[in-house]
Image (tube, rainbow, N blue to C red; front, side):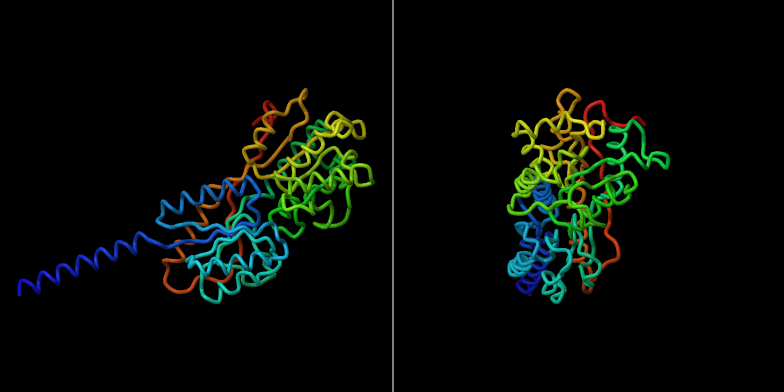
Length: 353
């Protein structure tokens, strides 16, 4: 009888121990699919995500879609994530207009979280939740600052004739995040702005950085190729970049060409020109902005800092919540959770409170 009781006690310890292992999620993993590893902002996000997932008892596997806007690499990466057994997939989609990549995971009731960029609502099922920066408001504040810098006043009903001429560069005109940035900077300020390269309507205006997986180099190449034509950035007060790598790539391209470099100290319509603005707030571009001055103008003037740690942590928390919840995760959502972003200014250039 004593032996039987000892056996039962031992079995209870094993069951208890096994429950502890399950609670610690030993061996469980999450997938993080990034549209392009060749981006400091995403590198920082991945590093922060790996550390946070580890704290929560999970391994974070990362997958690179290599800026493949066709969505084919997204599909491959989702399949790889499923093969590895990731319990949830956090995706920064390279193609937001097509949800074929996530359909196999949704069919298996694997929780899908959108991060930084969200699938367009028109695709239908796009996952259980999304976490993005508040990009439109920050971009609008950035335009207000640049307008005041050029014209010495804020945009108002009385000065709609005073236009800021903008050279715009996208990595992908269908990218949800870049569209939100363009909306805040350009579309909400159309009465005070003029796009000088490939003008059009809505999001189909401006140039697109193509021809190189490194979007910074691609943006620099496109800008250089257009410099002598009708779409030249030399006719703009401001160069708008959909992300920091492109802003940095164009800055470098201008800086390395003696003739193009004159733009930094030029005027357009008798108003100061030579300003570059980006979006992400990566460390290298934050240093660029900090280095800008009236005597050293060959630096990026403004960018928006995204809180990559807060975004990825929120996405991981949601993924774990869905993994542990009873029943299947939702297949779609109405609106992403927005994390506040802030404009980074050069020294002594921040607006007074």
